[in-house]
Length: 327
Ligand SMILES: [Zn+2]
Image 1 (cartoon, rainbow, N blue to C red):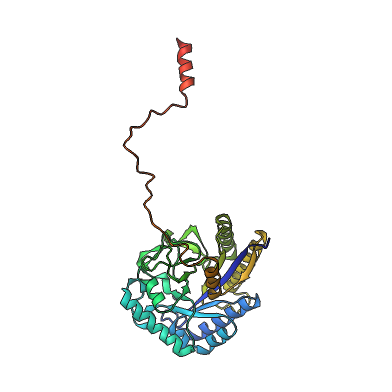
Image 2: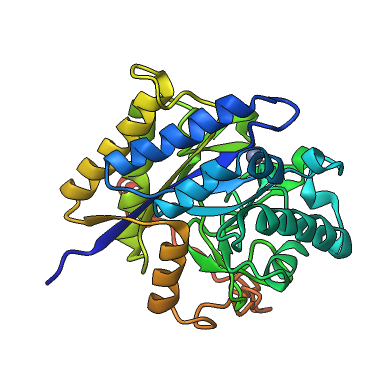
């Protein structure tokens, strides 16, 4: 029997021209060197880029695209003159904000964006329908178990694994042809006062901590027989991945080594993929519509009107015996 596969992907959110960072050169260095580190290990990444980074450095992203990396769209509405969080908007405003960003992407790069990523994971129950209507078919647009209402980013109850989105509810599995590809995370290790799970974001912790997150995620998927098993890391183009000895570069390479050794120990065949490739594998493995949630109230706790029977005591015989002895 062929060994089961473990798919491995990495995304980078490119937003160095955001007002808070405002360093185009850093963004270019970081994106190019992140791509080079992945290529050194035979991998191709998914770059989610905000419109202002694309317009500042179109050649960088055309070159990365030509080298086989996936170039997708990242969105921080504040960088385009809107409010900070996408998830506070209604469907018409979301459609306007996202279609403007997509148009800027296409007119700068000359091709359609692949994967989609919304800043802060700030989405609401209108968002998946808007993504689909605008032609997006896959992305990382949730952070399962996160409860961060101050960023309109609440994902408690969201599946940890790949799934089709639901048009009207952001946490349910649905039959919308949009494959959600969550990053790897540990739902039990909490950060930021317990609101955010420790995820496989390079800059959050060191290789040792990421090792435990990967190991736990692999063990869980093997035990659950998850149809498409995956490990997915993330980062931002605000770190010097090109500098030897840079802590973030070392952590990035540490995550790659950890994924390799954990997959090997589990007897899994590790395969590098972009988000587009992973979504295509998911579509082939899990037919659209076969997993949609059919909701039903769990009625097991609704007791009938029958009177409760007496409960037999575990110590009945022993105590009866004692009474007899005393008599
Ligand atoms: Zn971002």
